[in-house]
Image 1: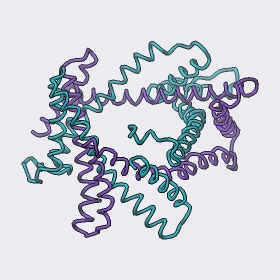
Image 2 (image 1 turned 30 degrees about the vertical axis):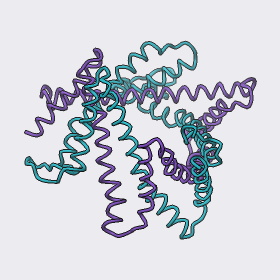
Image 3 (image 1 turned 90 degrees about the vertical axis):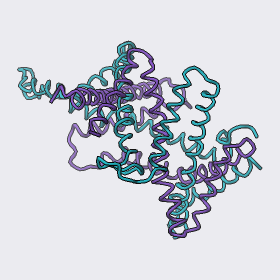
Image 4 (image 1 turned 180 degrees about the vertical axis):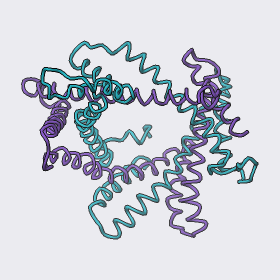
Length: 208
Length: 240
């Protein structure tokens, strides 16, 4: 019974959201606002159980690890948000998170997004037994990376050789954007098929 | 003081944590990286939800108080939030029949039932609706006006065909195709949309994404350093 009620409610909200394709209407607005409210409530529930209980309540109250009172007090400074005179206090937890995040992030970004990517780009030929087509593809990959980087390099005017390389870079970028577009469309279509399958199979039982 | 203390904190912690990753001693690994970075920051971040909830509550409350057009929907938003949060936080975990419990966030809880039967279908439908708008926008904007636009158009078309069974069907239908011209050449391979799609994703797509990632990484590093050295202060907000 509870499953049937759930299916009917899900079908109602699915149709309420789809009704926007006709025009903005009260059913859509109802569903939209409910979705925002429920999403925030869901976030509160998850943070309460997974973060607050797990990292604050259990360590401090059950395990007597009082050291965790310090980050708790720092976190409570967010409550300064509630009054104009104390609103500046929220800068303290933000600055701590930001300082640690940015300081720790810089070497990580270098390591993950620059050194590793560069290594993967420059050492691709270092595989014995590569066939002709693999060599061509690999060469294209290297050319694509460097020409696309040149397109983003604005210290030189895009004229002459630099202009030609930047132009090739644009072609690679366009192929990349086309692929991303195609994948996005297919992802959305998959979701759409999923919703229609739900409506016609799970709800109306029109298809087996 | 209101601006100096946060700036000093960002600088000090930024410099300490920049070097923390280079050391493998117990203080750096166990305290700075494990305790502070992994545990303390999670605790501090937990309380950030206070801001988002208060902000949402205030925005809706003001609209309801002013009886702004459509203020009834603001009630819906608040009720949704309060009900969902109550099931997770306030209500006890008592059995209510049909194998479900009232409180908590377990798989058989009311909280999870609302999530699965209201939130998930609505979110999936919201995202799926974008298919209509993308198709509509593509119909109006996609024109093979120059080489760049043509490349984008052709790539998108190949990837779309290569990701559905139609691509495989075309390849199967064409598998017997042969020609007297270059008889050794595997002509059906031209219609191997799945293979071509994979090649596009592996080679030109990877190349372009990698170049973009370099740019993003450089931007991220520059912004991080500007924040640490107090050049970028917009995160402080306000003027006081």
